[in-house]
Every structure is written in structure tokens, then in C-alpha cells.
Image (tube, one colour):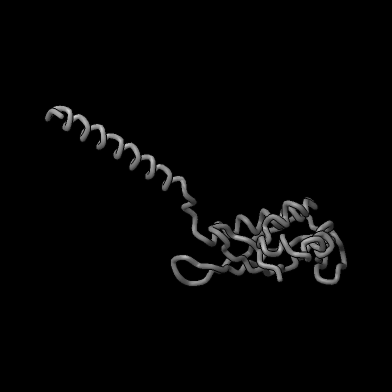
Length: 150
């Protein structure tokens, strides 16, 4: 092989390597740059909103796969039948384990309902709903956050 051919091959190899490297960097930039707390808050609110909408199948999708695959999953709708009275949800706080890669987070969701004189959420003198606190634990499974139910 001539010297020119070797130089051309090296240049082509360098070009291919540069392209692959730049594609890898673009892929890394596409990864979720939010904090674990932000990721968990979004998922917790989405799950609670699915319950407000009485979309139990979607809400169940936010629960740990081990629960979804177990026998208790068929009772999920019954467990949250009271969500038919929910009108609005709001994240109050999210607290994740210390460290660069937390594996669990605690979440408090406030649930506002339209059921006056319920056993846990009462209407105030102004007529607005007083929230019910719903505390949940979220765990990381294969790089995704899920609500932990036992």
C-alpha cells in the first residue's frame, strides 16, 4: 500500500471516530438533566393526576414493576376508589436520599377533594377544600422512578 493510501485510511478512520464521538455527545445531552427530586415530583404528580382522572391503568404504571406483576395489582382500583372525589393534586415536597445517585425518595402530595365532611378532608368556612396529605415512597428501578407499594 502506498503512503498516500495509508494517510487516506487514517484520515477516514479519524473522521468516522469524530462522527461517532459527536453522536455520543448528543446522546448524552439528551439524557434527563433534572435532579432526582424534579424527576420524582413530576412522576408523582402525573400518577396522582391519573387517579383524579380515574385512569387507574395509567396510575398503576407508576407503581413498581414488582407490584404491577403481583396479585395485589388487581386490587389497585379498589384501593384508590376514593380518588373519584379528588379534584386537584399538588406536590408539597420531595426528599431524596443523600448522595449523587439516590435510590429512594419520599414525597408528600396534597389532595383536594369535593367531598364535604369527609373523614380526612373538610371544607373550610370559606368553602374551599382542605387538603389531605398523601405520603409515598418512590424507588429507582432500572433508571426509572416508581412508587413503592407493599
